[in-house]
Amino acid sequence: MTPHDTVLIPGDGIGPEVAGAVRKVLDAADAPLTFHEHLAGVAALDAGLDVLPDATIEAIRKHGLALKGPCTTPVGEGFTSVNVQLRQKLELFAAVRPVRSLDGVKTRYDDVDLVIFRENTEGLYAGVENDIVPGVVTSMKIATDAASRRIAQRCFEYCRQRGRQKVTVFHKANIMKKSDGLFLRCVKDVHDDGFTDIAYETRIIDAGCMKLVQDPSQFDVLLMENFYGDVVSDLAAGLVGGLGVVPGANLGHDCAVFEAVHGSAPDIAGQSKANPLALLMSAVMMLNHLHETRGCAASHDAAERIKHAYNQALHDGQKTRDLGGDLNTDAFADAVIERL
Image (cartoon, rainbow, N blue to C red; front, side, top):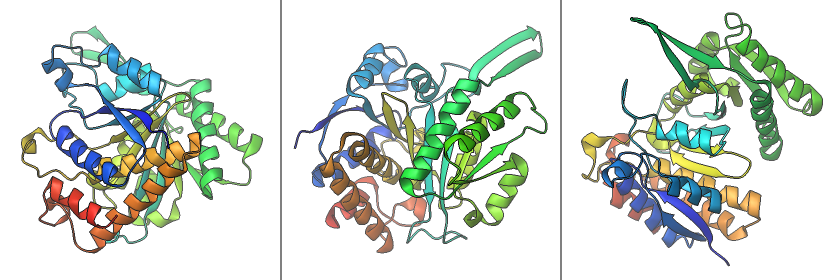
């Protein structure tokens, strides 16, 4: 078994703590990974580097794979989001966020099983903003035929591979007739051209969000442009216990970056209070990605064992404080390892 070279970006705040806990679980599960640590975010700035060093980007390009902890993004000022820069520079055009109910994590729903596909490179997140005159700012929403078809193709392929039955597109084409209208036309073309075995529907996003919180079981896979996908992904996480229990992947043609989607939580950094589960679940997604793209059976085996172990730990009441338990970061990792 040859280990797969993988970039590890610990991140900021609680990032190094959760990354350390996840590495401990991966080692215990004999996951076939060799990590090469690189910096990004405030940690890179503190080391006298750029917020997203060229060396970090080049390492991900070289190895094609990265696991990333949370990086701090200033609000209303300062440097551009590291996440946005990574997605744009590496053409990580598809954000994939599975959201499912977990045994032992009590919410008002017991049967949530969603996957959110988000276009990752354009829309309002293209970051094209201008001062027109004092007190007036414009933000430009970018929509292209190529990017819309690309995310639709990846979404429908995913459904076919995973046995998913239905795609619902959230949009606001009743108001943004050109940008969201183009997105809808492209998705429908891709569906009609080769994926008619998969059910397809559209929902205006405000009404769709209402339906989502009323009864999430009526949805299967949700597809949307960048900004909508960001908001709905976090909304959906709230259905199953929050951002601490959902993983995330950013996929391109040549590279894939798997990340915890929660923030860096500097207020609890260094206190071992953080829940490492989101990053651990992202690592499981990464291992399954290795199995699917590189045929690595050992990756699949490790992924299944880790998933079973953290599900069993939660079932047994082994939880961190954000989920109503009393375990610290390393103690939760130890609870998972005991159940491997």
